[in-house]
Length: 337
Image (cartoon, rainbow, N blue to C red; front, side, top):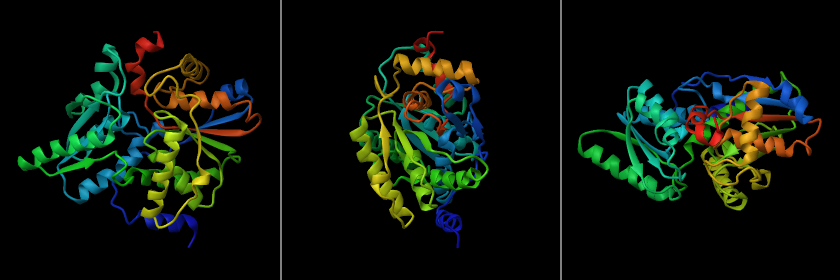
């Protein structure tokens, strides 16, 4: 059995719904390639099709697979005020005729009306989600516990809730979506020149670890550089290491922590905030390629590519675009337009 068939067989043991428009294309960014002195490609997971697309569609295929399998009628999820995960969960819940409760955490200190009411917040409401607030943004266990409390209340009313937990005490189920994405990428890579390095956002670490695990399980040794978007290097390294091990336990294999590459050079001034370099990167990417990258995630990934371009002169670099375009509308004040 081939490596792809073996890994696919392992994934097939987990319940899943199929919602993403896949395979997503790989585009060459010719103008930025010329500007930076590298060959720059982008894997367009902003084109996964559901509610502005993004990486969370792949992850939620496995969470909602569990919800449908257990005959849940309600999905609960927590995230930042402008969370792409929350917005996608609300949309996919609507697709599968499930009620949805979303909890918005205070991770970014801002009174911007665009941030508070536009972008993903507007979409959550449009998709019919019930919105709850959570007063802090750096306590995943407490946020998950608050979701569990809401779930218990719903059970007492006769509902069958399914909770998407994000804390590290729960399995990294969403990472399976990016193990599957690695299989998809392996089928595409033979059609393009060798990729020398992949850049991808590393926050919850589910996309990062799923992709890294999947590639290594397939015998593909392309370096995968996670770009820290929420935590500094050392704290994120601990998280990625733990999640990588857990994914290995779920799929009966292991990938060495020595394979983990991280950079936090684009993180400042912190989660959901932009440096001037990130702001300029977002503008340059839009003006040179007509491509939208967002302030919290993909803007920082592209900023990291810009920062590393001198080291990678003449190399083929792939930026994995995880979506997030609705958040751009929430950052109108910060972007200065």
